[in-house]
Length: 88
Image (cartoon, rainbow, N blue to C red; front, side, top):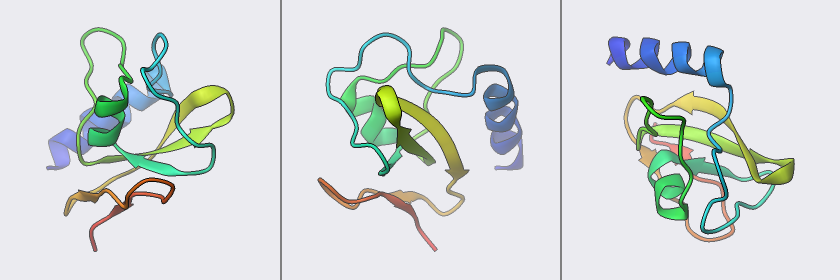
């Protein structure tokens, strides 16, 4: 898991955000989303990188996503209109 976290952090240093192109659905500003939810919404990373289901992202202005955390025990989808969160 440490290796995955290191790759995730390195990717963030280079790219910073997950949005590439227009997603199929927009995020709600201020909410957190699991990587799996972003995939379902149509968000994409640049070629060669991928969205991990157990990463947590924050929706900011302009439908842009910023990294929040890697969820070591899994990421929980809280449902429509609520922030997703890391399993404790």
